[in-house]
Length: 209
Ligand code: GLN
Image (cartoon, rainbow, N blue to C red; front, side):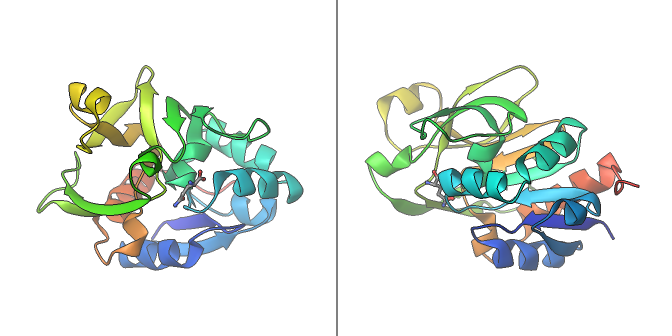
């Protein structure tokens, strides 16, 4: 059973831990570098990316997390967590930092201009079966993807620019990194977490000695 950490400085930590356990992992909260050393995968939850960025610095966790991500630790970021994984953030605060683990440009609160929160059924590549009920809460979308980034899901939200591209990108995978604009942890459907647990099993990163 892989041990997967949930960055627990801020955001919807408990829901991710429950979903990871439902998906067959052992879930542990991560608030300090020593806890980070013990995990084989990491979830960066939704919440508020500007606050999360600040707290990562205050708790001296930004560099340790970045170091493990750079070394290939499997990571899943949802919503604010997706923003934290991007190498470029639009509509962010000037002092907001992100890990740059995925070559992509993410726009914060992107759907928020039309509507704050919404739910819709989407198809996700690699997630078999019926469509996934995706919950979007002041969600970002992905505006640019770099080399090696695979689009797993798009959403048709009716905006012209997005429709021209077949819908806005809301889920991506790049190597050992997974990111979603939506919150799979708030629904009882654990398939996205199962997908991530499988990634962790496949990567076999192992805890740091
Ligand atoms: N709007 C938030 C941010 O910019 C993300 C919202 C969320 O995680 N639900 O960080």
